[in-house]
Amino acid sequence: MLSLALAALLVAASPAPAPPSPGEPLGISLESLPYPYPVRMLPITIEGQDLRMAYMDVAPSGPSNGKAVLLLHGKNFPGSYWADTIRALSAAGYRVVVPDQVGFGKSSKPDVHYTFELLAQQTAKLLETLGIFRVAVVGHSMGGMLAVRFALMYPQATTHLVLENPIGLEDYREKVPYQGVDATYRTLLAPSRDGLERFYRTYFATWREEFGTWADLAWRQTLGGEWPRGARASALTYEMIYSQPVVQDLGKIQVPVLLVIGQADRTTLGRGSLPPEVLATLGRFPELGKQAALAIPGAKLVELDGVGHIPHLEAADRFHPALLMFLR
Image 1 (cartoon, helix red, strand yellow):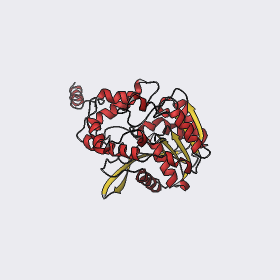
Image 2 (tube, one colour):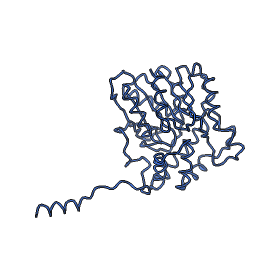
Image 3 (cartoon, helix red, strand yellow):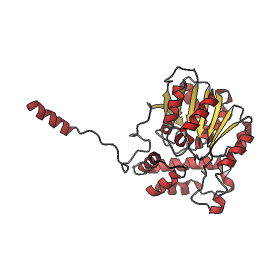
Image 4 (cartoon, one colour):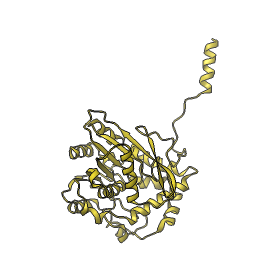
């Protein structure tokens, strides 16, 4: 009886941790958010600041084919949203490297001058540190813009280039008014929970309850004490996307390219500030995909009907077979 009483006291003193609630603050480096695979940190220095670049390095779960794939995330998602794609590639024998770019995910959020050249350079440094000198590059959304820049800067290191609904296939400066970092920062500093969910819903042709996770993560980051620093980094990377389009460089790509385009996607910069008649002319991915395929020498185009901005989440059963077939 004494033993049972002591055991009861111990249990009462050490309750099991409760899962985080939707309103619980989440640090801007996602400190308490578990990733699907172990996360490591690469020390780097940018503009005199000592920083850390987070990444996952996942070994093949099936027989190794000796090849590596690099997955590059979009602006409003951490590298963890590649979980199912990592599993598919790993099972097919690939080593998979998934960095959180500086300014995103679990990586540092410095106030620096962000460029796609800078991010590509740091990504190349990560691969060199890991002993990877040839890699297939898969980029989604903003990650597609970075993937293009990486392939142009490091063509000898790039075996394949896969662009999944990349933004930057049009020059936003032609139609979206410039607002500057400070104005963007003020907008990002205090969003509403409902506004964030409406924003994330635009990424999907068919909304599923599970997709709400990503809006919750974005909202919880805004509740923490360091969010102003996170908002500043986000504003700086918005400026990077706005001022550094890649559409003019598509014809210079010299590696095999696969374009996977969800046909229901209408993602664009400036969605909340443009008149309807202007907004209707931007983010027309069925047209942008065809134009990009014509501009890139030898590009293969896969069009996914009824799919929005993130095929690897919304239509993994169609995205992954197309990806694996191309890589093989």
